Length: 412
Ligand SMILES: [Ca+2]
Ligand SMILES: [Ca+2]
Ligand SMILES: [Ca+2]
Ligand SMILES: [Ca+2]
Image (tube, rainbow, N blue to C red; front, side, top):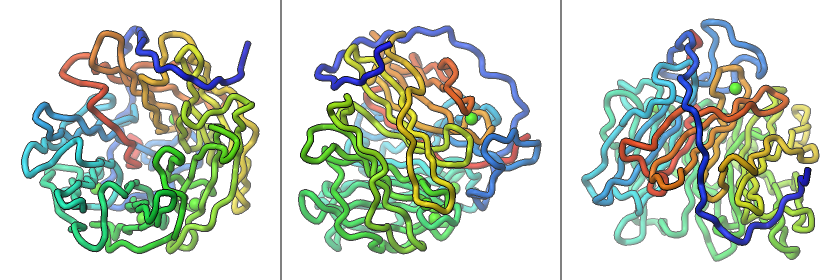
């Protein structure tokens, strides 16, 4: 088997993943937590949690463009332990007030008890472009009260929608997601601003790092806890500077709730080895269940298909993060899988503490999409299984975007 990766020069539009849609496994249904997020106090990864144990019950937050330019916010339970598993639920229709799919970035997370009736389902943060180039920061909480709250007016103070890149993650380890905004100061550098959550809303921005490399076409970023101290770190993925479009992982650790460190290189994949920054995307989570954070590279193949690579974490806490040499974790070069026609996430879909792969996939000759899970056994990924068939109902792959909210619940 040829396991080399190749740079992909042509984006094909052929998407033919066909499936037999199975019904989700019946399970004792759990109960979402309200109030505090137990954060990292959950059961040890790999354990099968007993009833009453706190387990991940992640939501997929979906933002879908409306024909007139507004947007619908949705949540879809990703854990089979949760009521409504695989069924999108409409959270809020934003067809007023200038809300715009095209002129906003929307993030799903567990930011706080935003309203008195917040039920612990996904919160949605809206980073909303303003006519003067600035930004308004809005929040929509989980639960019955989904009226958008205007949290911050960033139309002054030098804030620029065009120059900013918002992300959600719990960078100070208190269980609530914080907003991290990379704001460019020149074409190649950005400041990392952090808006800490106090459990109810986001506070004033503070600079955690000066002059991190800007994102754009030469960098991507993921917020994830690489060293398992409870605080999400800033993970940078970049081309192999000076040597072409290879791919490198760099981690900037969250330090003491007030800064990111200067960064350490975890992996360099040279272009000569087939690695391509441009033909790959990156995910961070514990997919092996050993409690150490792994990294996953989704890499395009010459025929347009996909290889899933595992870079297994080899850090022993509290040591320096490190990665084992990458191995193929799943071969999706056949079966109609398309790199260009899919988006991937990591989330624990069965409450065993091991992150599973989730794919949102465009369909041939159909504007809609299928959402799949690839359950991790800890040593590999099981065959993909459809968890939501969104080929009908008005869903459109090309005018929707998603994110995973790190929400938790009690196993039923
Ligand atoms: Ca909330
Ligand atoms: Ca936090
Ligand atoms: Ca960390
Ligand atoms: Ca799992």
